[in-house]
Image 1 (cartoon, rainbow, N blue to C red):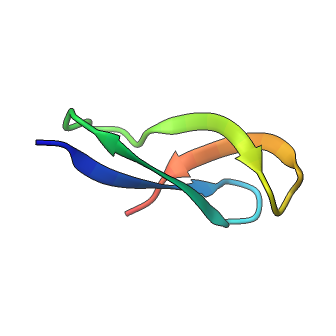
Image 2 (cartoon, helix red, strand yellow):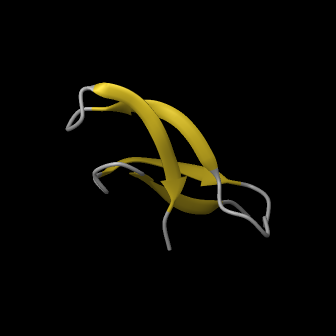
Length: 48
C-alpha cells in the first residue's frame, strides 16, 4: 500500500510537492526540487 508524502522546502517552508512512497522508511525523504517561492533548486524534505 502506498503512502502519500508531502514535500516542503527547507529554506522557506513552502509545501510545493506531493508524491507517493511505497516503503516505510525510518528517515524522511529528501529530494532536490525547484521551489517557486525561492525561484531556485533547493532541498525539499518530507513533512508529517
